[in-house]
Image (cartoon, rainbow, N blue to C red; front, side, top):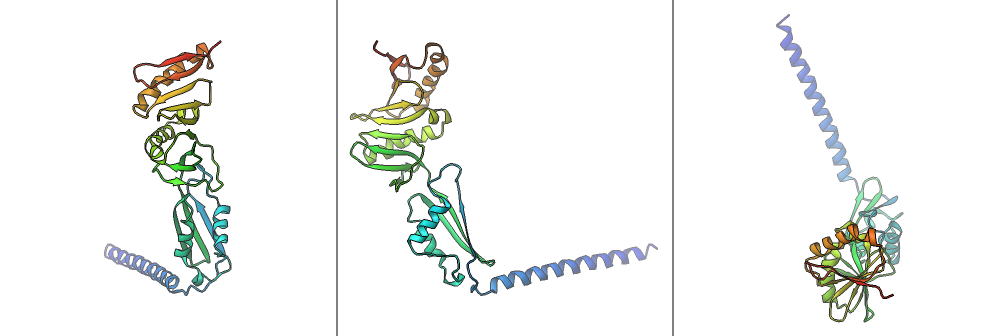
Length: 254
């Protein structure tokens, strides 16, 4: 009995090896068949996936289709071998709101498009008439008919000022949910100092420059949480948080 046990183990091991070899052989055949299959099939469907679609709606499936149609790039129904993925990618990247576009074909007749959006942090509508969006890298994008619920910067704004001071403020607001919800407008004075228009209350917030934003807004939040609930939100005409060691509130004229 004991002598037959090693024999059974040997037979079992042999069967297991045979199964593994058979499975690997089958997978090799399938993968080789797919790799060598001629790309003469017809594009039956275009799959479009938009990254960050929950955070911004600038680029939608309909917008991607419109961009391709404008350039006469009709994909569905075309032979796969006639579709140039690089051409489709290059066409999509002409849109400033698309930061990355990955295009590839699959053997089942699908053409896949994966889009990464460039997400703006504010819209700039300067007093000289310039109008554009700006992302967190300082990339400027023409509106192109798009609209979004973002903070709007107005006033005396040069593009260099926008990429320096406003970019710093915009990133701060984006990364702080509380203040991002509170501030609806940034206004730049002739001297380059900055005022903010809050969504709640009638007091204009004077920030000055963009230095020490953490401290300035920490002081302001203490005012919001400890003082305003008692005295009301509309008592002051302006609130100056330019200095880190004090807040100066100016009452409304009676």
